[in-house]
Image 1 (tube, rainbow, N blue to C red):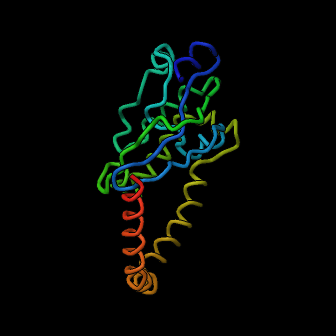
Image 2 (spheres, one colour; image 1 turned 120 degrees about the horizontal axis):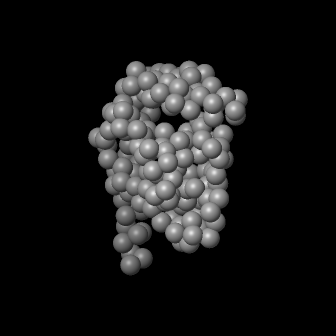
Length: 183
């Protein structure tokens, strides 16, 4: 389906689709419809989206200096620096494994800030064109992260998780029982 889009629409540079998580997390990956503003603020296109080899060559490919991740995000921004369309197909055709231990969830705050600065410096004209300063976005996001972190680490939250544990176990067992009786 993605190849057909690329063959029939030369203005399209990237094609991606709906996706599902599997592994340690099993649910639909809530990817928004493409917009340049979304893409400048969040990596909304997964690493296995389709694109033309000629566009890959023109951008120079992935920047291997992104050692802590987000090299695919940088690549998508490079692909779109000079315009082009992005199509999101409505079907789930991509499955992304989630592991408790991975490069993505082992990035510390300093490394994360470094990634944001590198993205901004590498695509400053694109960010400026859309009136977005990712460093300000990052700092705003950190306020919410710190609030979330203080709640999750509070004694009240930990106690409520412990008290709710039997209900979560029953819910999980009931879901397993119901799914096994359907087949």
